[in-house]
Length: 221
Image (cartoon, rainbow, N blue to C red; front, side, top):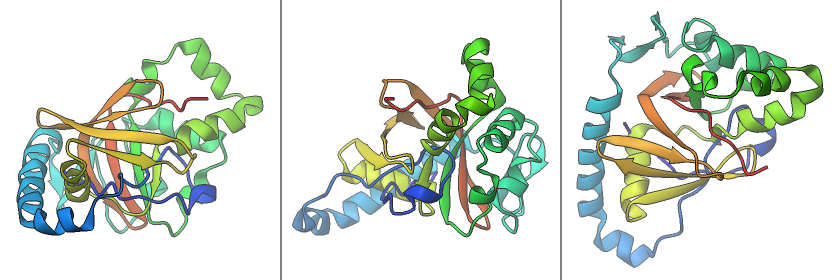
């Protein structure tokens, strides 16, 4: 998985799910002196992540998601609506009025929870979030899964390596996510201590990239 966790929140007003922010600043001298080692380690981490998470058959070099081909020529929304594993996410995006945002130029990095991830949320809570009066709260949760810029698996792995085991990102919603490696998997930790594992990485889109995750990430408030 290539994960470039060097993110900014400059597009904070333009996104959908919760994103990531820039990794902690590193000493330039240390980065230069360790560049070869970091690159080698990042490549190794990326290969391990890819073998562990990108388990779906590839179509034209892009993983299939939810039984459907994800076409790099299509945008985030147009691909997501074809995935049978993301019907709840698509419904939430529509309820939060974020469709046009996510069809925008971007680029965006989206950590996309599956239907099973949403099933972990109490049914009553999810039903409340989908109501019109909860649109602001729902949008806040969704944009907490979005990061400005196109951050692939390799760049995320490199950021974790350079951060000595973790990288912190600011999301479009304004909160932070922390990325670490657990075995061969990239794991995201939210502001409440909840964890979500990337199960399929590098699903390329015309306006960014999607990484499928197995739990919904929650901002502090």
